[in-house]
Image (tube, rainbow, N blue to C red):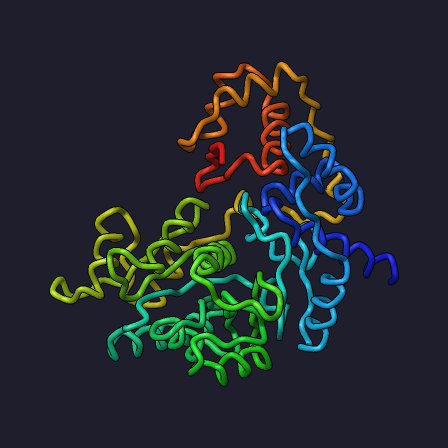
Length: 361
Protein backbone atom coordinates (compact mmCIF):
# COMPACT_ATOMS: atom_id res chain seq x y z
CA UNK A 1 0.00 0.00 0.00
CA UNK A 2 2.80 2.39 0.94
CA UNK A 3 4.50 1.58 -2.37
CA UNK A 4 1.34 2.43 -4.32
CA UNK A 5 0.94 5.76 -2.49
CA UNK A 6 4.59 6.64 -3.14
CA UNK A 7 4.25 5.75 -6.84
CA UNK A 8 1.09 7.88 -7.11
CA UNK A 9 2.91 10.80 -5.49
CA UNK A 10 5.84 10.42 -7.91
CA UNK A 11 3.49 10.26 -10.91
CA UNK A 12 1.69 13.41 -9.75
CA UNK A 13 4.95 15.22 -9.16
CA UNK A 14 6.03 14.37 -12.71
CA UNK A 15 2.67 15.42 -14.17
CA UNK A 16 2.55 18.72 -12.26
CA UNK A 17 6.11 19.72 -13.22
CA UNK A 18 6.90 22.42 -15.79
CA UNK A 19 7.44 21.45 -19.45
CA UNK A 20 6.01 17.96 -18.93
CA UNK A 21 2.84 17.47 -20.96
CA UNK A 22 0.93 14.29 -21.80
CA UNK A 23 3.24 13.15 -24.62
CA UNK A 24 6.40 13.84 -22.62
CA UNK A 25 4.99 12.11 -19.55
CA UNK A 26 4.15 8.95 -21.50
CA UNK A 27 7.59 8.90 -23.13
CA UNK A 28 9.37 9.35 -19.81
CA UNK A 29 7.44 6.53 -18.15
CA UNK A 30 7.99 4.25 -21.15
CA UNK A 31 11.72 5.01 -21.19
CA UNK A 32 12.53 4.84 -17.49
CA UNK A 33 9.89 2.43 -16.23
CA UNK A 34 8.71 4.48 -13.26
CA UNK A 35 7.94 8.07 -12.34
CA UNK A 36 10.65 8.06 -9.68
CA UNK A 37 13.33 7.11 -12.22
CA UNK A 38 11.98 9.66 -14.70
CA UNK A 39 12.16 12.45 -12.09
CA UNK A 40 15.82 11.59 -11.48
CA UNK A 41 16.58 11.68 -15.22
CA UNK A 42 14.83 14.96 -16.09
CA UNK A 43 17.73 17.35 -15.22
CA UNK A 44 20.22 15.45 -17.39
CA UNK A 45 17.79 15.21 -20.32
CA UNK A 46 17.06 18.95 -20.14
CA UNK A 47 20.78 19.73 -20.12
CA UNK A 48 21.19 17.67 -23.30
CA UNK A 49 18.41 19.75 -24.83
CA UNK A 50 20.37 22.93 -24.22
CA UNK A 51 18.33 24.42 -21.41
CA UNK A 52 17.84 24.48 -17.69
CA UNK A 53 16.08 21.64 -15.98
CA UNK A 54 12.37 22.33 -15.50
CA UNK A 55 11.20 23.18 -12.02
CA UNK A 56 9.90 19.93 -10.60
CA UNK A 57 6.70 20.07 -8.57
CA UNK A 58 7.11 20.49 -4.82
CA UNK A 59 6.43 17.19 -3.02
CA UNK A 60 4.58 19.13 -0.33
CA UNK A 61 2.23 20.55 -2.94
CA UNK A 62 1.57 17.04 -4.24
CA UNK A 63 0.78 15.88 -0.69
CA UNK A 64 -1.69 18.75 -0.28
CA UNK A 65 -3.35 17.88 -3.59
CA UNK A 66 -3.70 14.22 -2.64
CA UNK A 67 -5.25 15.20 0.69
CA UNK A 68 -7.72 17.54 -1.05
CA UNK A 69 -8.72 14.82 -3.53
CA UNK A 70 -9.30 12.36 -0.69
CA UNK A 71 -11.36 14.94 1.22
CA UNK A 72 -13.61 15.35 -1.82
CA UNK A 73 -14.19 11.60 -1.92
CA UNK A 74 -12.50 11.42 -5.33
CA UNK A 75 -9.83 9.07 -6.67
CA UNK A 76 -6.99 9.18 -9.18
CA UNK A 77 -6.96 7.22 -12.44
CA UNK A 78 -3.44 7.05 -13.90
CA UNK A 79 -2.63 6.39 -17.54
CA UNK A 80 -1.24 2.89 -17.92
CA UNK A 81 -3.22 1.37 -15.05
CA UNK A 82 -6.15 -1.07 -15.47
CA UNK A 83 -8.81 1.40 -14.25
CA UNK A 84 -7.94 4.02 -16.87
CA UNK A 85 -10.51 4.19 -19.73
CA UNK A 86 -9.15 2.17 -22.65
CA UNK A 87 -10.52 4.32 -25.50
CA UNK A 88 -9.08 7.48 -23.96
CA UNK A 89 -5.72 5.77 -23.48
CA UNK A 90 -5.58 5.29 -27.26
CA UNK A 91 -5.11 9.06 -27.77
CA UNK A 92 -1.56 10.29 -28.23
CA UNK A 93 -2.38 13.16 -25.87
CA UNK A 94 -4.26 11.08 -23.29
CA UNK A 95 -4.28 12.82 -19.89
CA UNK A 96 -1.65 11.26 -17.60
CA UNK A 97 -4.13 11.43 -14.73
CA UNK A 98 -7.86 11.87 -14.24
CA UNK A 99 -9.58 12.70 -10.97
CA UNK A 100 -12.91 10.88 -10.66
CA UNK A 101 -15.89 11.40 -8.38
CA UNK A 102 -18.74 8.94 -8.56
CA UNK A 103 -19.27 5.65 -10.36
CA UNK A 104 -15.94 4.98 -12.07
CA UNK A 105 -17.40 1.74 -13.42
CA UNK A 106 -19.19 3.81 -16.05
CA UNK A 107 -15.83 4.17 -17.79
CA UNK A 108 -15.92 0.52 -18.81
CA UNK A 109 -19.22 0.85 -20.70
CA UNK A 110 -19.71 1.89 -24.34
CA UNK A 111 -19.92 5.69 -24.50
CA UNK A 112 -21.32 8.31 -26.86
CA UNK A 113 -20.32 11.97 -26.54
CA UNK A 114 -23.02 14.60 -26.94
CA UNK A 115 -22.17 18.30 -27.23
CA UNK A 116 -23.77 21.46 -28.56
CA UNK A 117 -24.58 25.11 -28.13
CA UNK A 118 -24.63 26.77 -24.73
CA UNK A 119 -27.36 29.13 -25.97
CA UNK A 120 -29.32 26.25 -27.46
CA UNK A 121 -32.98 26.55 -28.39
CA UNK A 122 -35.62 24.97 -26.18
CA UNK A 123 -36.47 22.52 -28.96
CA UNK A 124 -32.85 21.41 -29.32
CA UNK A 125 -32.47 20.92 -25.55
CA UNK A 126 -35.62 18.80 -25.48
CA UNK A 127 -34.37 16.76 -28.44
CA UNK A 128 -30.94 16.27 -26.83
CA UNK A 129 -32.56 15.18 -23.56
CA UNK A 130 -34.65 12.60 -25.42
CA UNK A 131 -31.64 11.31 -27.39
CA UNK A 132 -29.62 10.94 -24.20
CA UNK A 133 -32.44 9.08 -22.47
CA UNK A 134 -32.79 6.73 -25.43
CA UNK A 135 -29.04 6.09 -25.56
CA UNK A 136 -28.97 5.29 -21.84
CA UNK A 137 -31.89 2.89 -22.26
CA UNK A 138 -29.94 1.23 -25.11
CA UNK A 139 -27.02 0.56 -22.77
CA UNK A 140 -24.83 3.50 -23.78
CA UNK A 141 -23.11 5.96 -21.45
CA UNK A 142 -23.45 9.62 -22.48
CA UNK A 143 -20.38 11.85 -22.01
CA UNK A 144 -20.59 15.63 -22.09
CA UNK A 145 -19.07 18.77 -20.60
CA UNK A 146 -21.63 20.03 -18.04
CA UNK A 147 -21.95 23.36 -19.87
CA UNK A 148 -25.18 25.28 -20.28
CA UNK A 149 -27.61 24.23 -22.99
CA UNK A 150 -27.10 20.92 -24.80
CA UNK A 151 -24.56 19.52 -22.31
CA UNK A 152 -26.92 20.05 -19.40
CA UNK A 153 -29.83 18.50 -21.30
CA UNK A 154 -27.70 15.46 -22.21
CA UNK A 155 -26.70 14.84 -18.60
CA UNK A 156 -30.26 15.28 -17.38
CA UNK A 157 -31.61 12.84 -19.93
CA UNK A 158 -29.00 10.12 -19.42
CA UNK A 159 -28.58 10.19 -15.62
CA UNK A 160 -27.36 7.95 -14.06
CA UNK A 161 -25.62 6.62 -17.21
CA UNK A 162 -23.64 9.78 -17.85
CA UNK A 163 -20.10 11.15 -17.48
CA UNK A 164 -19.50 14.87 -16.96
CA UNK A 165 -16.03 16.13 -17.87
CA UNK A 166 -15.27 19.51 -16.29
CA UNK A 167 -12.54 22.08 -16.98
CA UNK A 168 -11.99 23.03 -13.34
CA UNK A 169 -11.17 21.33 -10.08
CA UNK A 170 -13.91 19.20 -8.53
CA UNK A 171 -14.48 21.79 -5.81
CA UNK A 172 -15.45 24.49 -8.32
CA UNK A 173 -18.75 24.51 -10.22
CA UNK A 174 -18.92 26.09 -13.67
CA UNK A 175 -21.30 27.41 -14.71
CA UNK A 176 -22.39 28.25 -11.16
CA UNK A 177 -26.04 27.40 -11.88
CA UNK A 178 -24.99 23.79 -12.49
CA UNK A 179 -23.51 23.37 -9.01
CA UNK A 180 -26.40 21.21 -7.80
CA UNK A 181 -26.31 19.13 -11.01
CA UNK A 182 -22.55 18.61 -10.65
CA UNK A 183 -23.02 17.29 -7.10
CA UNK A 184 -25.89 15.07 -8.23
CA UNK A 185 -23.75 13.57 -10.99
CA UNK A 186 -20.84 13.04 -8.58
CA UNK A 187 -23.24 11.04 -6.41
CA UNK A 188 -25.36 9.18 -8.98
CA UNK A 189 -23.17 9.15 -12.12
CA UNK A 190 -19.54 10.24 -12.73
CA UNK A 191 -17.66 13.53 -12.85
CA UNK A 192 -14.12 13.63 -14.30
CA UNK A 193 -11.48 16.34 -14.26
CA UNK A 194 -7.88 16.59 -15.40
CA UNK A 195 -7.32 19.57 -13.11
CA UNK A 196 -6.41 19.43 -9.40
CA UNK A 197 -8.77 20.83 -6.74
CA UNK A 198 -8.80 24.61 -6.56
CA UNK A 199 -8.24 25.08 -10.31
CA UNK A 200 -10.44 27.74 -11.89
CA UNK A 201 -11.96 26.99 -15.34
CA UNK A 202 -9.55 29.03 -17.47
CA UNK A 203 -10.13 29.32 -21.23
CA UNK A 204 -7.17 27.12 -22.15
CA UNK A 205 -8.60 24.22 -20.13
CA UNK A 206 -11.76 23.86 -22.23
CA UNK A 207 -10.08 22.46 -25.40
CA UNK A 208 -8.21 20.05 -23.11
CA UNK A 209 -11.53 18.99 -21.59
CA UNK A 210 -13.00 18.57 -25.08
CA UNK A 211 -10.33 16.03 -26.06
CA UNK A 212 -11.30 13.94 -23.02
CA UNK A 213 -14.99 14.01 -23.98
CA UNK A 214 -14.16 12.93 -27.55
CA UNK A 215 -11.59 10.38 -26.38
CA UNK A 216 -13.95 8.59 -24.01
CA UNK A 217 -16.51 7.87 -26.71
CA UNK A 218 -16.81 5.78 -29.84
CA UNK A 219 -18.60 8.68 -31.50
CA UNK A 220 -19.61 12.30 -30.93
CA UNK A 221 -23.07 13.72 -31.62
CA UNK A 222 -23.40 17.49 -32.13
CA UNK A 223 -26.80 19.06 -31.48
CA UNK A 224 -26.85 22.75 -32.50
CA UNK A 225 -23.50 24.51 -32.84
CA UNK A 226 -22.22 27.73 -34.34
CA UNK A 227 -19.59 27.45 -37.11
CA UNK A 228 -16.85 28.51 -34.64
CA UNK A 229 -17.54 26.81 -31.34
CA UNK A 230 -16.11 24.42 -28.78
CA UNK A 231 -18.55 21.78 -29.98
CA UNK A 232 -16.94 21.74 -33.41
CA UNK A 233 -13.53 21.49 -31.74
CA UNK A 234 -14.77 18.36 -29.98
CA UNK A 235 -16.06 16.99 -33.30
CA UNK A 236 -12.70 17.68 -34.96
CA UNK A 237 -10.83 15.95 -32.13
CA UNK A 238 -13.15 12.96 -32.46
CA UNK A 239 -12.48 12.77 -36.20
CA UNK A 240 -8.71 13.02 -35.66
CA UNK A 241 -8.95 10.11 -33.22
CA UNK A 242 -10.74 8.00 -35.82
CA UNK A 243 -14.09 8.15 -34.03
CA UNK A 244 -17.52 8.60 -35.61
CA UNK A 245 -18.79 12.20 -35.97
CA UNK A 246 -22.56 12.68 -36.11
CA UNK A 247 -24.70 15.79 -36.30
CA UNK A 248 -28.37 16.67 -35.97
CA UNK A 249 -29.50 18.84 -38.92
CA UNK A 250 -31.18 22.15 -38.31
CA UNK A 251 -32.83 25.05 -40.02
CA UNK A 252 -30.53 26.88 -42.44
CA UNK A 253 -31.80 30.21 -41.14
CA UNK A 254 -30.85 29.46 -37.52
CA UNK A 255 -27.18 30.41 -36.81
CA UNK A 256 -27.10 27.80 -34.05
CA UNK A 257 -27.62 25.06 -36.64
CA UNK A 258 -24.98 26.20 -39.12
CA UNK A 259 -22.18 24.24 -37.44
CA UNK A 260 -24.14 20.98 -37.58
CA UNK A 261 -25.15 21.52 -41.18
CA UNK A 262 -21.52 22.26 -42.05
CA UNK A 263 -20.38 19.03 -40.37
CA UNK A 264 -22.93 17.04 -42.39
CA UNK A 265 -21.81 18.70 -45.61
CA UNK A 266 -18.22 17.73 -44.75
CA UNK A 267 -19.13 14.09 -44.20
CA UNK A 268 -20.51 13.73 -40.68
CA UNK A 269 -23.34 11.22 -40.30
CA UNK A 270 -26.78 12.83 -40.23
CA UNK A 271 -28.73 11.57 -37.21
CA UNK A 272 -32.36 12.11 -36.27
CA UNK A 273 -32.87 9.30 -33.75
CA UNK A 274 -31.17 6.96 -31.31
CA UNK A 275 -31.41 4.22 -33.95
CA UNK A 276 -29.38 6.38 -36.36
CA UNK A 277 -26.63 6.77 -33.73
CA UNK A 278 -26.46 3.08 -32.90
CA UNK A 279 -26.38 2.18 -36.61
CA UNK A 280 -23.55 4.65 -37.25
CA UNK A 281 -21.47 3.29 -34.39
CA UNK A 282 -21.79 -0.37 -35.34
CA UNK A 283 -19.63 -2.94 -33.54
CA UNK A 284 -16.55 -1.78 -31.66
CA UNK A 285 -13.37 -1.90 -33.76
CA UNK A 286 -10.64 -3.42 -31.52
CA UNK A 287 -8.05 -1.22 -33.23
CA UNK A 288 -9.60 1.77 -31.41
CA UNK A 289 -8.54 0.35 -28.06
CA UNK A 290 -5.08 0.21 -26.55
CA UNK A 291 -4.91 -2.52 -23.92
CA UNK A 292 -4.19 -1.07 -20.47
CA UNK A 293 -0.75 -1.84 -19.13
CA UNK A 294 0.58 -1.63 -15.61
CA UNK A 295 4.28 -1.99 -16.34
CA UNK A 296 4.99 0.30 -19.33
CA UNK A 297 7.88 -2.03 -20.08
CA UNK A 298 8.67 -0.60 -23.50
CA UNK A 299 12.30 -0.82 -24.64
CA UNK A 300 14.11 2.47 -24.01
CA UNK A 301 14.53 4.79 -27.01
CA UNK A 302 17.97 5.17 -28.52
CA UNK A 303 20.21 7.88 -27.12
CA UNK A 304 21.12 10.62 -29.57
CA UNK A 305 24.60 11.84 -30.40
CA UNK A 306 25.49 15.54 -30.47
CA UNK A 307 25.54 15.42 -34.28
CA UNK A 308 22.07 13.89 -34.37
CA UNK A 309 20.77 16.54 -31.97
CA UNK A 310 22.14 19.27 -34.22
CA UNK A 311 20.59 17.63 -37.29
CA UNK A 312 17.11 17.51 -35.77
CA UNK A 313 17.29 20.97 -34.20
CA UNK A 314 18.41 22.51 -37.51
CA UNK A 315 15.18 21.26 -39.11
CA UNK A 316 13.02 23.01 -36.51
CA UNK A 317 11.79 26.59 -36.51
CA UNK A 318 8.88 28.72 -35.35
CA UNK A 319 6.50 27.09 -37.87
CA UNK A 320 4.99 23.78 -36.64
CA UNK A 321 6.20 20.76 -38.63
CA UNK A 322 4.97 17.13 -38.50
CA UNK A 323 7.26 14.78 -36.58
CA UNK A 324 7.06 12.33 -39.50
CA UNK A 325 8.60 15.01 -41.71
CA UNK A 326 11.48 15.47 -39.27
CA UNK A 327 12.13 11.73 -39.36
CA UNK A 328 12.06 11.70 -43.17
CA UNK A 329 14.30 14.72 -43.67
CA UNK A 330 16.79 13.87 -40.92
CA UNK A 331 17.21 10.27 -42.03
CA UNK A 332 17.33 9.25 -38.37
CA UNK A 333 15.32 6.56 -36.63
CA UNK A 334 11.99 7.57 -35.05
CA UNK A 335 13.41 6.67 -31.62
CA UNK A 336 16.35 9.08 -31.99
CA UNK A 337 14.14 11.91 -33.24
CA UNK A 338 11.69 11.40 -30.37
CA UNK A 339 14.59 11.41 -27.91
CA UNK A 340 15.86 14.74 -29.22
CA UNK A 341 12.35 16.25 -29.12
CA UNK A 342 11.90 15.01 -25.55
CA UNK A 343 15.15 16.67 -24.49
CA UNK A 344 14.23 19.94 -26.21
CA UNK A 345 10.81 20.00 -24.57
CA UNK A 346 12.22 19.39 -21.10
CA UNK A 347 14.69 22.21 -21.79
CA UNK A 348 11.76 24.55 -22.55
CA UNK A 349 12.76 24.96 -26.19
CA UNK A 350 10.02 22.93 -27.91
CA UNK A 351 6.28 23.39 -28.30
CA UNK A 352 3.91 20.59 -29.29
CA UNK A 353 0.88 21.25 -31.49
CA UNK A 354 -2.17 19.34 -32.65
CA UNK A 355 -1.64 16.71 -35.32
CA UNK A 356 1.73 15.49 -33.96
CA UNK A 357 3.48 18.71 -35.01
CA UNK A 358 6.26 20.53 -33.17
CA UNK A 359 8.08 23.87 -33.32
CA UNK A 360 10.85 25.67 -31.49
CA UNK A 361 9.46 27.79 -28.67
